[in-house]
Length: 108
Picture (tube, rainbow, N blue to C red):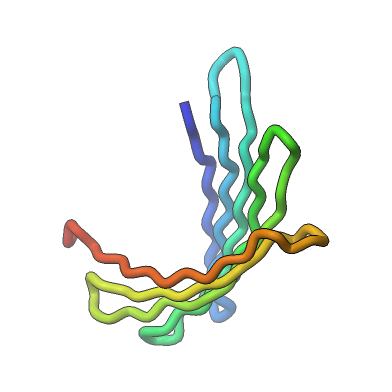
């Protein structure tokens, strides 16, 4: 069973920090760690920049990555985001640019 242990911290005027530990298998008999994510973000009205560092634990060993970007809140239920990032290994083989759209399906 995949599981995530998450912790969020309000940094006041400096934004917020979120930390996640990811597990592929979490049972009484074994714990299989699969990576972590540390994210910082701050809201400036409708704009929200973010910075993230994370790992992916693979059979060949852990890979370290970072990314950064921003989100723009179009309205209460719709946002647009842009990000880019790369691995932190010396060869920098894994690079990406991403554009996304998110919407809130339930208005709670």
